[in-house]
Length: 154
Image (tube, rainbow, N blue to C red; front, side, top):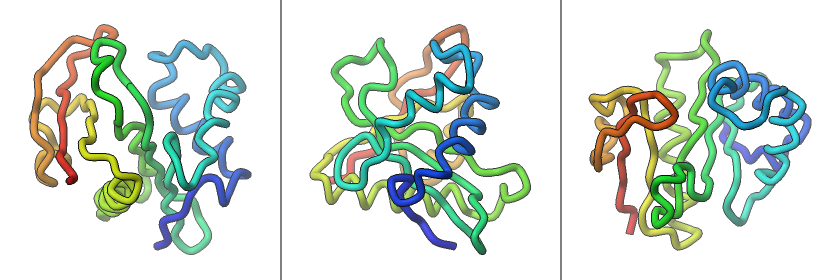
């Protein structure tokens, strides 16, 4: 499996947008898939935030995740977030999300980011807890109970 930037594969942006729209579109201010595709254009970066990292296996896109700014409006002081961690259903349970996350952390370190945040609906922390992310608090955000977590990467 290769981990590559969306910026190197801009033709895959509609697929990533489709995944995100189907999974979380009901939470988004964008009401159409086309709006979501337009919103994700700013992620076509390799050396600055925001960016999207892709997992590609045997030429097939199997996963994606974002390194982004200020995901939750209730935490304006928390700057750098991991979001949009998605693995295609047929490829789940194979450690792909873990590999993407480890590479995103390495990228964040190279960008001199000291702390990353994320939110998850898995209130026990799930994969993130097993990878050393620490819970900050559980909150109801946009009508959904989520656990907000952080990871120091200094």
